Length: 281
Image (tube, rainbow, N blue to C red; front, side):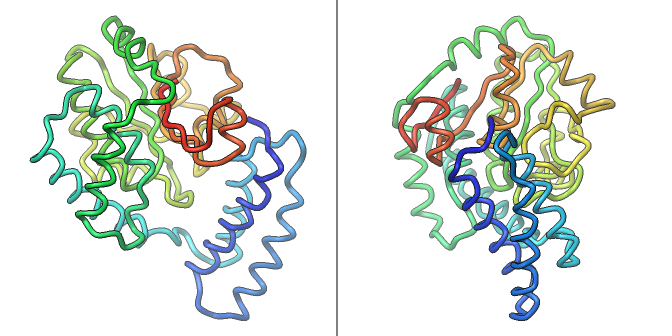
């Protein structure tokens, strides 16, 4: 997906967030903001938003001298998501379709912003009772029946606990399928790294593999090695979140099923759906 005009402000907002998470020094924040503004010249009319944003964030990390400014945020997200999911599993009969919806809803909730456990659980229950705006889950499940390999492209921390449950249900329903679970090699905002996936125990439901880079989504023209082999040979690919859509939608690959909420106007516009729509496409 190529950039829309709103992408500029979204990237700028994320740069501000990175700066504020990295230092309390106001002078350093000002210098970093000016540096980030200069980096925005990387944006071209045909840029893919997730890729150019990742390049800007990476250079900003280096300028600030930080490796993972979202580390504490991700840890809080994972801790709360784990608790929420444990409570939901005790009170809800989770089948395969419900687990799929939970994996999408898990992407919607910001687990680290101070919601109470009860409010998050209530919001999630309400959301999974709603219909998906576009629902191709039956086709996904039908094709998984005959698939030998599944590549699961994760998105953010927090929601990876919901991904784990979904993959557990997939393994129960389709026990012969080989599952690969991809995480980032280096930190990229709040995306899950391979280390994050291991800490959350996702190796219990599949083989964890590295994308090989610290870029949000999957920049297909840059992948190589083992991940490229897995990507090209997988029978089915499940891609979570907006960044995976942004970087993969132009491939026109019918093996890829996207699970996401159209959080922003550019994604909604690209898909021809209302902003806020929850989708399995």
